[in-house]
Length: 470
Image (cartoon, rainbow, N blue to C red; front, side):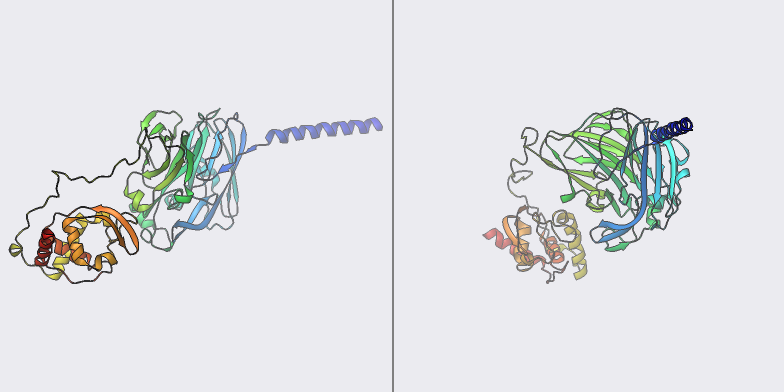
């Protein structure tokens, strides 16, 4: 009887050992996720069996200052996290749709070889989980996105990210890696209109983007949110374009890309590149060594997208100056083309000009302002803080319009105080006749909260003559 019990215990131990070994054999390495601009860690391991868990969640968040948007997300952020695996990995993918979601979601990973890139196997209702497996056959930097109908709407609302399939042994080592995704948003209200902005299908179909941003919102990587590097370090950017519509002309102001892996491949096939195109649903890898301190500006060089729609990000570089590579400003002198003194045009005979109504004079003044003044003082007269003084609601302008006329005639150099702020810049003389000066001053002094009478051309001529006599 004792021997029989011993045999039973031995057999049970063997079976438990075999079962535990099988469980251990099926255990998978959990893939950590990293959220932009963090790019995670380089992988140097061998390929193996891994598991990815990714949640879809619908959240309300900041699109710009004062502007909110109902984002549909992977991982609760736009873009979704970067997923880093190794070429040859056998991946078990779990897509979890949060119970608070209103929509079903799925995932199309461009790194997957199979129907829909996984979309066909991952359609997931709110509060459910879908599981599928794939093998990472090809190294590269790939986009993933939701592909649930209407596909464009799911992508436009923020459902995209990058998956990096690293070659075994990893990419060549660098000092810093950052994760950046560009995308375009379409809102019912125009750019900057405050409040919770709904998605505009009409604008999206017409490809009229209100916002073009890096990492999900205006200013997501500027100021205090800028990433940092040190002089002498090599920086690698993993850049994606979630779209849904626009192609990115990606450029870093103040740098040249030493190496570009175009279209997300792993072959460094270009050197010394200024800008690189990234299609919607595509990617690129760029590398560069930072040589001098300062702030590098990432832009879409379809430049109105940068300065008027939000496609700006920053890398702040710290370290020692290198004046051989870049000196900074060494001089600031006045440039006078075509000779030394300020040039003047002959003043047209005022009597020969066709008389204009009050409104015609203001319209003429507006056109002159837009042609000659708006580049510095801006279209709405707001100026540029610390550089070009405002004309809108300007105490300096309105307290002495004859002085303003004299500045248009002769220019101005030196410090002035406008609305309590100091400005010290150079305004060149404007080569306008007396009638044009009267009209442009008339427009400026009656726009943007300013209010005054219109000066006449003869009055401007009198001021001009008095300036010459001094």
